[in-house]
Image (cartoon, rainbow, N blue to C red; front, side, top):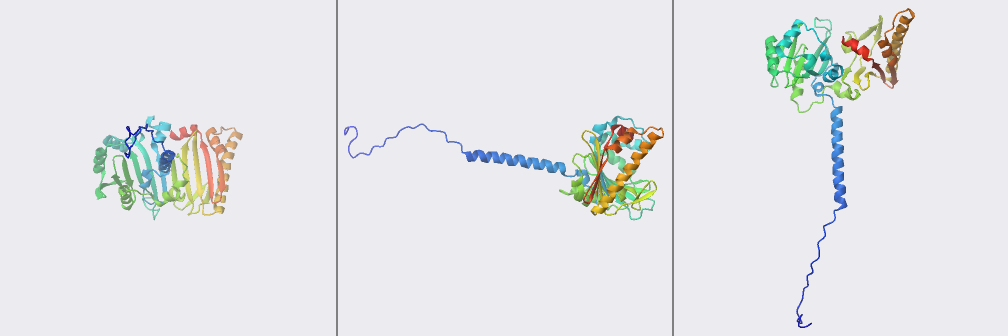
Length: 342
């Protein structure tokens, strides 16, 4: 042995040991799964908030007394109303010929702001409107038509505003983008200026009425409206039914909506100032439904033919009241809907 390993010599022996792959850490796996879960949840929340946020066209509207929105593309897809021949009047035909725009075919969305004028007894009437239309159009052709019809133009926020005389009013029109048009027939330009400001803002959540009550609009509604019922109906704030005056509180908000799931569902919700007002409204609505139901039965008793579609609509109507809210729901028969389109 001394011959092999001399004394007082340090010998180091190195052995070759096969290397093993490092085991994957369970922490790494859980971290990866957790990160994926966070991304999925964040994406779902984003989609949900996007679906529940008001359409861009409505958020462009100025402050008003009432708001109405219609997803025209959805209505067109469901009813195919664009396939029905329409005989245009001379004014509309001139517009189509000059711009190439056919509203039945090219309009996708329409948003309306309804304004009560200070004096409802002027030649302009009690109401004015600000509108946003979204659809398909040739910008150059539309601009040329508006220029030919306008009595004056104004440049504001990088856009041209065309002032077009129509029915004793000045209608101001601005082309906001490739698919969006803003219109207002208010006596002053503040409303259309506001719409242009909203369009140029990075994000605008919409007028106060929209911010306060859009959450009350049922999801998947293709048409809906918010506001005080006195604004679009009468100048004195009252509704008259069968000769009787029905007073409506001025601080009551109504939310009306229509959506198509298995049928066309209507919903009208009153948000009253207190429980008592909501209860009175619910009772009044039940009385009106009873009147119409009795009228249908009277027709049958006298030998007439009751309207089957109207009878089905009345039969489907339900009225509920909870706290300061009264809600009317009903299902519209397709036969009645087709008659309304005629």
